[in-house]
Figure 1: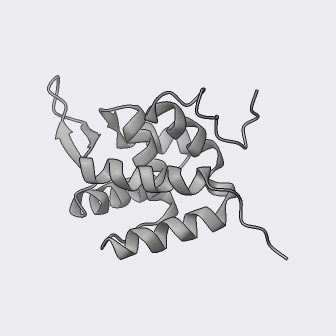
Figure 2: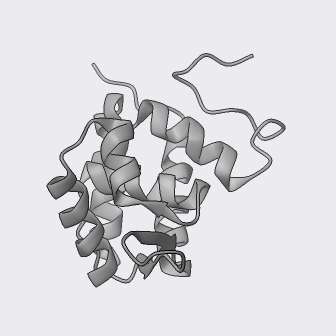
Length: 133
């Protein structure tokens, strides 16, 4: 049994969605992992912020998630979520599609390149922790 600060082992992490759900719970607490993720993404030509990790992991777990939902869930300003999502679109990590029901909301979807960036994050999180001191 895992607490909220560890990723599930391979037997429990049967899907990318399960792993991302665990990742979102600990992203803010693991500065080292986020820094390494940002550096590795930069080598692939991507400029990412910690909030982008949350957005990408949420989009993987819930295709069609809206910016408003993320803003409410994480108590982030709608402007911050919108700007981050726009930048992720510019980097071709997500796409946004207007809701077919009423057209008022943009639903975000992960791209293959975005999925690769999420997997990079998850690989770093599964690596043995770096020892300090």
